[in-house]
Length: 488
Image (tube, rainbow, N blue to C red):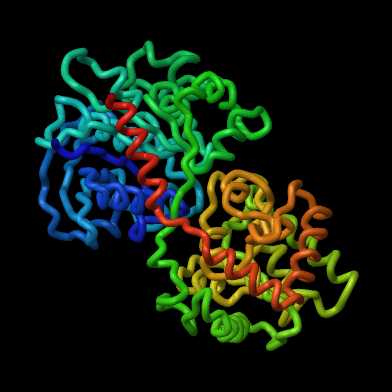
């Protein structure tokens, strides 16, 4: 029996092009299903980093101009070290741009993003039907987020009605990003007039890439079971809740996995000392090293709290300054130290600079992307803070559990699905609060600090956290089951 064939279409791919969790999943899920016998291939724009990584990738297809605004392109073929085939979509006018894949040097969206990712979506659809220029045809086209959301739309509205097409899946990694563009983009993309309706790509007078995908895909997934329920509510549905309730029968929440090899404290090359659940004492070496690296006081009487995140309102990180000033009224020095890595909202960055100046030796922040430091914060922190207002899945709380760094999280999305509050005794793995308020965070923070001072009980909590399995094995099986149901 021939292997099932799946084409993953993505705008990011770790380790080459990454702005968030999408890139990690776009690399890990194809690897995981490929290891289980699926013929998985990935379509991704040929950004400068990918061109540099695969300079000799041969061209396997030429794509003529699809409209007067969608330029001609080439598809080049490469292969990852795990054996997954990459189709690199080469269109230098759209993708040969340095830095962030969506933002220009001024920090604003590229004005032609609609055309850039319209081309990506349209080529994904083209490679998924019998008119593909490739010999290989997928059974499933698996799209992710708004950047490939028009893939199912183009397959549904292709200009011919004969021939086989792939079944389609779209995964929502973050519903807040919906790919909204002006109506005048529709003819430039080659969408037919009848695609413009409330049951198509139209969304309050705009063209929405994501809404199109949600409307037309054969199956919708998102990255945790709780988030799948939350986005069907008015409070969390970002204006798409009615559509998602209407399509609830094809909506599934499948929790992401993590790379258990890259994030393994027993072998991690980024950290000062290796450790595991049976040998936790070496974790203290990482804590000392992290304090030194971040310029924090060498004080073992207080826990060290780690944060690795985009500094945004969504992540709840506007609550941290209020928490620290509240704690400062109660005790000096603060009852905990903080090591922060991230960047984002300029107002929040300014607030965090002020915290570092106000609490020297107690609060340290680095405004950058730094993979090695992210690993060292996970390994060296005593606890990890994620007070997100919403969190589709989250990966850092799983990294934290893996490194024996109990997370302090709000009960939302994937955080609710992965962290069990310490009050649940032998099942507890971290500290969970319900409401995105300073008061709720303050109460849980004090509870976590008290638990840390109970060294024997806290070590047991760490070992329970480290026993959790967040590998890609179970998610890969769930996706393969979904693909089989679609093909049956």
